[in-house]
Length: 229
Image (cartoon, rainbow, N blue to C red; front, side, top):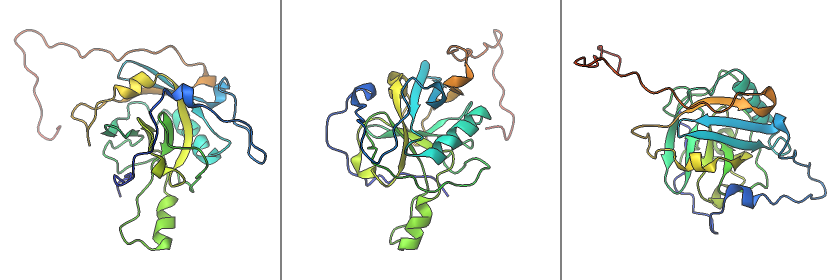
């Protein structure tokens, strides 16, 4: 079943601001404190084919199971090479499916919903999940809510109607320009990909751009074998 976000969600009010400028999370009695933005164990690094490294501040204080899943899959190299398969202008960029078509996930069990007070503002990173069918029963809606696995999306602009319906587990705090450069489409004609993903605590190397495609010798043409495309 495809992991889709409802296109009927209303656009959130407010002007899109740089992600780092919107981090306003003062301590509130009764809430767990978020990790500092300097905590390398909770910084997720995505090296994108669009030209640079994206730094995502993970939030185990509100979505501990999804954050743990991201760390586990990242350290397995699960996200390396994965496409941004669904990218909608003025909305979001979705990735995390090794099949590249929105129908896949990891071999790990689905996760329960971790809805919180965090809003779907520009730069928010949220867990994709299955959508409930039209006229769904409360039981069907609840079942769909508990299907987050490996896929995620990054918001281009606010969409506050998604709040408390999807699990926000992080926020882009650096490199949002590389997210903005992801080609649009469902799917994109020439999709961007995650070249490599890291947890900052694992001492990753600096960003390395993708290797250019090898040029064919003069006079030769690329040959496509039957069944390869």
